[in-house]
Structure formats: structure tokens, C-alpha cells
Amino acid sequence: MLVGTSQATASRAVSRLADNELLIRERMPDNAKEWQLRLTTNGAELARLKGLLDERLHQAALQVASHYTPAELTRFNQLLGELLQLSSKTFQDID
Image (cartoon, rainbow, N blue to C red; front, side, top):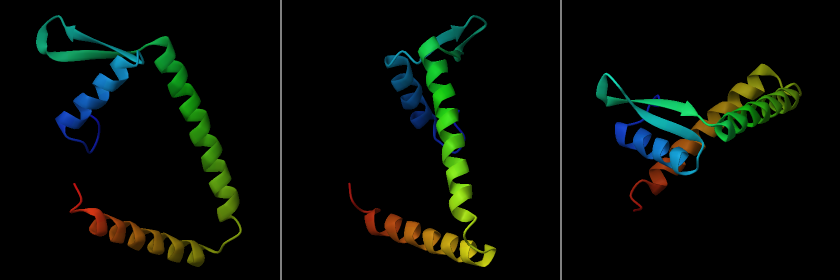
């Protein structure tokens, strides 16, 4: 299961990936309730590219952060946390 997600959410994510031919799911031969998941060639390439993108973004963030003191970064993180909480409270009752 995806960390921090429900079984239903993980199942939908796996279905979308399979529908887009990014992974293959096969029933386990000794347990019909379990699935084996394997990336397709396209899925593996997408994962590789995502890793490269994540690394570039991380390096860019480090470059930006290098211009600020640890105290300034701590305050900025606090502000972002407060904005995220405000956002989730503001939109929690919208269907």
C-alpha cells in the first residue's frame, strides 16, 4: 500500500498506472488476494525522469535557500505551514 493512503486510494492509483501502461499487475500464484506490480519500460523511464526532475528541483531549492539564514528559513517554513492549514480549513467543506 502507498504510505499514508487508504487501500481504496492506492487501488485507484494502481489502476490509473495500469490503464496508462506504466505498470503491470499480476495475481500472485499462491495467494489470489495479492498482486505483483512491475513497472513497464515506459513506467521505468517515467520513474527515472521523475527522479532526475526531483534532483534538479532539490538542487535549485538548495541554491535559493543558501541566500537565507537558518532563522529566516525556519520562519518561512512556519509561514508555509500556517498557509497550508488555512487552506485546508477553508476548503474542507467544499464537495
